Length: 223
Image (tube, rainbow, N blue to C red; front, side, top):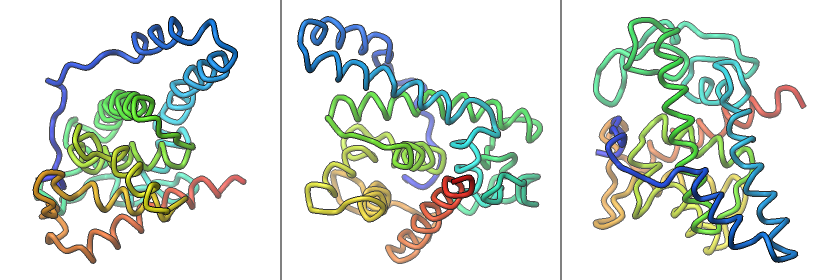
């Protein structure tokens, strides 16, 4: 089931540092390589900045997508704890985590997990030659927070779906919505796997649009 949490910690992948090292070897002697390498180096810096603390902009955006923060970062009553619609477990903290004895502990543990998942998503984007702006990065990490399998599936996760949606002519938020909703479909069978949303395409679409809008509101709040 793609809607419920799934632990990917047992999958061994190359570290981002190793990938950057290989990129340096292959690109250092070309004029275009300098520009490409500079862009690669900026990606983890952006991710680190967005998820530096529970009150960093990316973290607040994910918190808002979960319904636990307002667009300006104020906690809602749900941050103290609420029942998960997917598996009925008790969610706590800004990211609706099920790991931690207190909201603060849950936030720190989940934030570390999101940073790791974010690096993997960015590695995939680099490998697939998919450019991501800040809003698209946050949506990718938010999807990982909601459903790691939907975001990180090596055959049909967020980055692969975004690439497909762009090739079909979708751009901007329309492409993000397309990618997020399609990520809940099994890449082999095409079956929608979102039991927490009743396996309803309409409910999945509304839920993903709501989360996209919440993230956008946070990013617009200080502009």
